Length: 78
Image 1 (tube, rainbow, N blue to C red):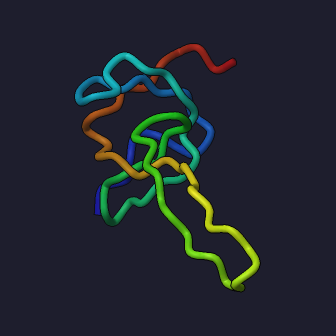
Image 2 (tube, one colour):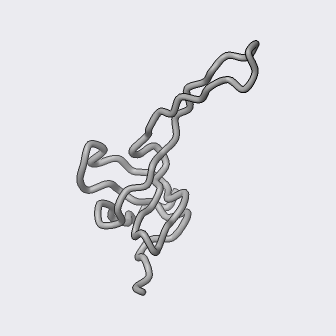
């Protein structure tokens, strides 16, 4: 199995897709799936039901993984 060229904490730029040109920090890596989670990229909304009747439901936004071939490491590690 080949290792990924990015690690958690690296700054990367998205090269293709709807978020092309965005720069963010790698939050998670999935080497077997060849996917990475980048902060602020590929953000998805999930609707959660309330657990109790008196509570309201929620809409949570979180980043989904993208394929590692769609990112490029940048030298700006700020």
